[in-house]
Length: 301
Image (cartoon, helix red, strand yellow):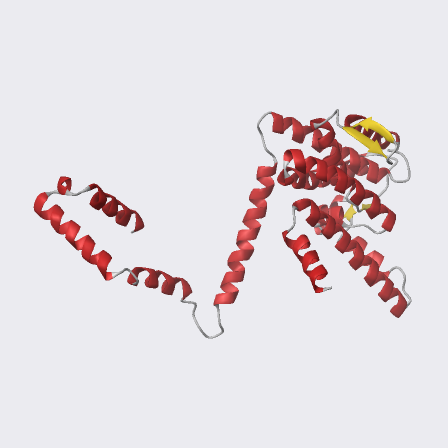
């Protein structure tokens, strides 16, 4: 049992980006479902957790609500409120993500998921505020990012055979084109927001692959942000660990001091001998080894 838990921990925090996306989506869904079950049993209020999750995690269609909850542009793409919803999205993400990672790498796959989710969310907000038939609402789900990964794979490997339900074999581009066509035909249906987000993810995938072929890598910008956040968190954690109440943190100074004072006496004597030789006979009198040693010391200073 402990080995199984250790494996889950490893996959969730140190696995490839596809595995981490799957764990994050499933983890959020389990947290929502379990907390909703217990709160409902203990309080009798069935809508408490759904309302709270909708307020904190779902993407609102009204701009003023988004202004007060800007984080929802990211959190919505990791949130699901029904088992059927998350099952469908994770199956597509797993198979299309595996295929894309094999040919384009996991960094591009992650960038497509994030950019596709943001693009789908923004298109959802724009259309919900300019269309006379769409009212205010909110949206959750990984569909936009998942469709972005799928469409990008179809653009990069259009003729790859894909077997549907283990029976019908079609080309990859046909599958992607069929899904996009269904989304267009369903724009005025009951799940208009989800289909709009799908189209946003597909549009992002198109420009992502097109830019990649022209030598412009969008994933570079994403990982610059990730590295900046990671470095900030790392510096803050180091400061917290090195600081004790009522004491100053001399760690860095002591490390530098130790490095300088730990220079062996033999090295000092060798350096003095080389300097004396230069003083008496000039720099050209040094051997290759002595010149290399002097160069090395000057670089380390």
